[in-house]
Image (tube, rainbow over all chains, first blue to last red; front, side, top):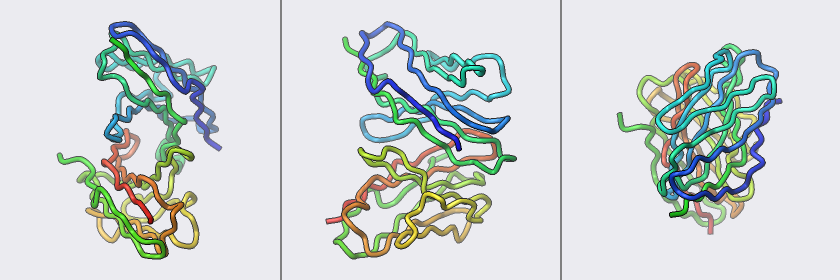
Length: 117
Length: 112
């Protein structure tokens, strides 16, 4: 069975610094996709960044980047130059490839990030 | 692109009444998902459709919950005989093949 684990319940950082959020996953699929989402204070869940399991290069989008360590089944999210508005709950998620039939996203429990002035 | 649209945004029902939640996926997306979010359980998968066909409903409470996708432009989640423990935010999402999943803003269901 697929499983996603986020052990950090909450993190506080000072703005303009860098923060890393951890995530480990379990899957038997040979091909899969890893995602990070952000849930804002209004409850909206927003897609941030994605890593395809077959790609060795870490994904980067704006001030978000990933630290993908496949042998460790780990996908960390790095946010550089944090801003107050980055304060939110961050979810790690995984889904299998279409060929696997397991298309649904499996979520971790989330990490609350607070960015302080 | 208006994104995934969910209606209503808020719904209050009396215990034992029926609640129907609506979802309009992003045009062209082949998969539609329903999730439920509570403080205690977090984000729970309920069910999903691919090309309108039900594929996996393993997360659905068996007796009172049902989901349909009568056409490619909308899906419904129906809860019969609502109970207080059904109170949650219900999220609809859609995606294309092997891409990220996009979420609607959710329907907050409160059973009183």
